[in-house]
Amino acid sequence: MKNSKANNNKAAAEGETVTMPKAEYELLKTSAAERDASQEKLLRIQADYENARRRMEKDKAEFLKFANEGFALDLLPILDNLEMAEKHIKEAKDFKAVQEGIDMIQLQIQKFVKDVGLERIKTVGEKFDPHLHEAFETIESPDGDDGVITAELKPGYRLNGKLLRPAVVKIIKRKGG
Image (cartoon, rainbow, N blue to C red; front, side, top):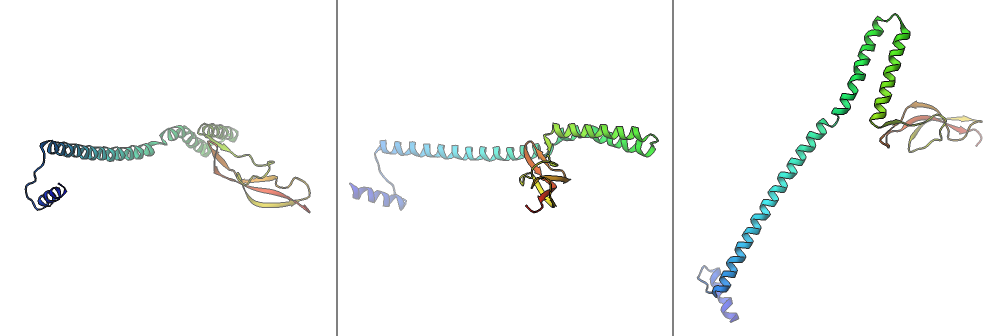
């Protein structure tokens, strides 16, 4: 029997007719149909995946393009007030009123910054923290604690708790310590 199957396989490879029981032939047809259906299903799934991936990339690009829209809209009134203040400065006779206008804009900016999650890092009088501060200069002093910040050269900020920019500071180095 083994020899017969080997001859049948050889015959099939050479393009000759192969004989097999009808049940085996039906099973082979069913298996081939299932394979073809599975292959077609796999190709459809791959195409759907590629389409979904492209759609997600397009949606992501669109989202990033307009992600700062709310931020920009909240910033516009501050810009408007700065423009108005600039006009009044050029025509000003009452500098106290100009100063009050600038103070109001400063408060508006501080509120805006707080609302977007931007927080200024505390510096002067605080202990130097290399994770939050960048020491620009060290001042030797007989008084004061070692590593305490004496001056802020550039403010540092966190955005929603994440360090955005370290504060640039001067710190005390105790003389003789």
